[in-house]
Length: 260
Image (cartoon, rainbow, N blue to C red; front, top):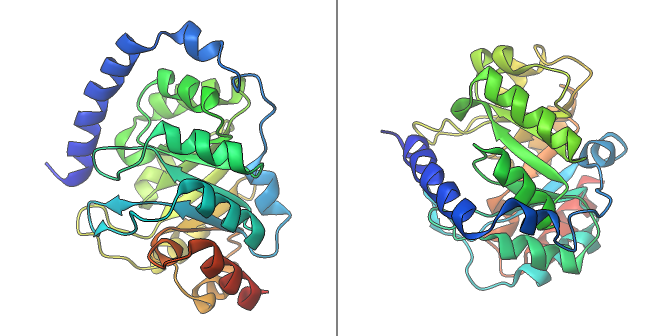
């Protein structure tokens, strides 16, 4: 079993437990459930920089990244920096996140929030809406085409944007469908954890223009972004580059100023 298989196996157990603790009607009656969502896809289309900045405490590949900063401070710092959206990791066991992180971010900012999670069940989409996020991530490596279709269509009914993540051409070809807004190419090989933006460049020509192209992982320099923009990428998910500093918001401000 690779790390992704382990995470997903644990996620099935976790979702079953959550379903038994919080019934669907409770999620649907939450204060945030009917708020109007903000489109990350639209924000990226209209942006010069396309930065999606992440809140991530730790990861299986890097262990601790940053346990000190508060979600609220990171969110407000990112918003001041002018990022297009913020990605919030909500997986607890492997990434040290929680749904409460989403709530705290939502209370602090009004920009689009992406729930970064291993989504395997419609219940998680109802949670996403109830906790104030605007966008969901679907990972092609852990879902069949039918699952991608049903989850993405359900997300659209909830007015959530859908970012689908792929790692190779095979995943991309099985996944393209009208219920997606953004196609993200993860530059990290989930089996070896090696990172190369060549993956994004190679797959760019296979992504139809209807979708906003997002490059994820291993983006730490202005040069890498300028290079990928030539391949029609509009979004750049930056995870550890800001979070590994003492003040992620200040790091994002400096980075975006240079990029402009």
